[in-house]
Figure 1 (tube, rainbow over the protein chains, first blue to last red):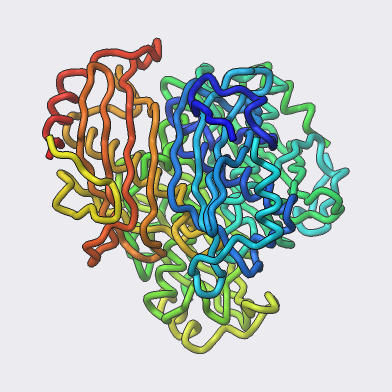
Figure 2 (cartoon, helix red, strand yellow):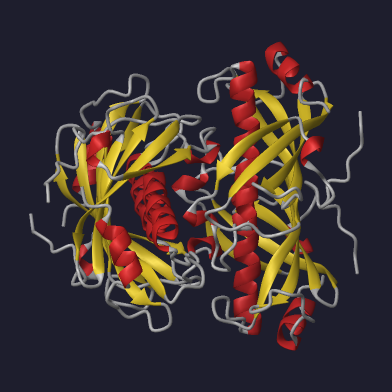
Length: 147
Length: 147
Length: 147
Length: 147
């Protein structure tokens, strides 16, 4: 498994899967840029969309949920509505209950990452909210994101 | 100018311009549906995107801004991440300073409106924040939205 | 039951219950004011907080949910972070399954409403999502909001 | 200057300044907890509110802005509307243009942190958006947050 810098040198080819996200007017904050908080929305959207598509995860009524234990982001250059971004996703570590994703946000037409970050999610039982072993279908979907 | 019902009988052909909006994980509220508040984000996004594309409005540093004076929405059927919606836009009244937009949100593949609503915007000078006559470029762009 | 104007002449004494809401940095949009969409967050927060406090509604795991069927808002004067607002709530109509709330947002220290609006909610069964008669505890709580 | 763990052992007394934040209905995500993204809203709100109060920073029209270069958060226990949280703030490093804040979110009545995190902000000129030396008034306000 490769080690990545998670900084402004990250490139599109370092990520295994992408989703396209049009920015929204309300993503801009009063400085006229997409607010830093919004990138975490992009991260969560990318992860959940991948899981739904790749593993059939039922994000509303499924028996397992993914709770975020830790996340972080570095901001390299600003993004602005109405730009469209591609959010790239890869997996760098799969544990018994947890997974570490790394993500890169690229403005369409731009090879340099606008932001890079990571998310550590823990899978829990939807009733007890206690950690569980990652379900097989999801684990296989996660393994396909290792680059 | 036609009169519309602004209810669940609104159809795609009643709108003059559309923008496609993928829902985001965080659009869902704790009931597992896109929250009612989010539709107003869709409305604002559609209006601003149209103005940027059709009139070259500089939404960040332009000399005129659009302030919302009134808006409203009716919810006909629920939408859920990761569905994609088309937000339709038309103009039904253009005054000296103000414009009334009407909007319809349609899930892709669905002919029936999930929600219908309206927005009344007033154009103001970006420095004084006082109403101004709608700039000519914008007025022409708005007139093209009358159905 | 009185009839109200729901316009800028609404006063604090026209509302039956208030909750205090500090604005957040991210409530401001790129024009430097609390964005119009955010007022609907205030409305939903006020209604839900009242129901939790007055009727013991379990907003997460209760057997009945409140779905919004329609809402609307008029904006009279701008609000800006870090101002604190009081959101006033009253009930003007209680049906078998539905209720019509009216709300006013007042900046602290200001007698004039910054915004006024309404919300029509329908109570549904949390499993079937079909309309139900308003549960007795909730109905009694709603009746106390009639002014 | 002390070194902190930034984990679940952080206590209220490790922070220099607090602001009280009532959660909002829409802070809860579809798992019924305050969504991880919202904590970054709390962080930004706390930092901006402190700067406005302590240094007179004009967050809308001032000559200097604070751009976020990096942030991160660890989630220790869940929070749920309508709980009220206290967000604690301290400064651990002041550079020429940048500052590193650390934050802790505590549910009222709870001594254990629900979440802990950090934010690195860079001060920039509001016109050129290039880094500047931290203005004296702001620097003094930041120094008072060192614990």
